[in-house]
Image (cartoon, rainbow, N blue to C red; front, side, top):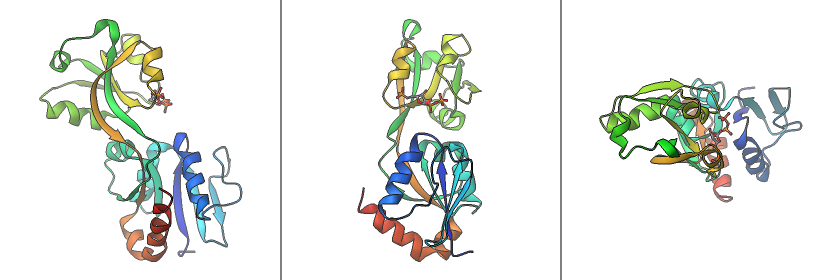
Amino acid sequence: MNDFITIALPKGKLFGLSTELFSKIGWTADGLHEKSRKLVITNDAARLKFIITKTADVPTYVEYGAADIGVIGKDVIDESGRDVYELLDLGFGKCHLMMAVPKDKKRARLEDYAHTRVATKFPRIAEKFFAERGMQMEYIKLNGSIELGPIIGLSESIVDIVETGTTLRENNLEEFAHICDATARLIANRVSYRLKFDRINNLVNKLEKFL
Ligand code: PRP
């Protein structure tokens, strides 16, 4: 069994884009779809195992070697702090991390938000951003619908990802500071990358042709 490659794919926006890319090079399996109740989907002939996980858990499966490789956003890798090897920038899933505030309560400068509360799914990235600017903040970790924070008075600002900007606009929030850009990455477990070098490297070479 250990010549199988196990691939961790996140549920959500990156799932379809990832399976589409992998299928272009024949890396697929019967029944591989996001709503599958089966969480491990195997292609015995191609010696592939796909596992479908929560987005934030992909780096964990890969760091521990439960998955040899995975697809995940750069934002999630940085937030996780997990030790994984980034093999390839896949280019899709483009978004950026930013700080946003309510339009009608906008303060003049970033420093004017020092010591206020930030609602975020990315406390590690947010803390690094503010600490580098000498700002101490109170971080409130939320798991979704971050934009609610300032609307209902939980926080003065948010740190979150933006793709189209629709969610910000619809909730009367405005981007106040850009933090970093992110795209989907192909990541590998460091030991798997050495032990299964031929297959993983071959995958990287083939995928590069489609990017
Ligand atoms: C993300 C993010 C924003 C939204 C941004 O949420 O947290 O809410 O997408 O996208 P937009 O700029 O295109 O509007 P997601 O859909 O992942 O759900 P969540 O709120 O449950 O985290």
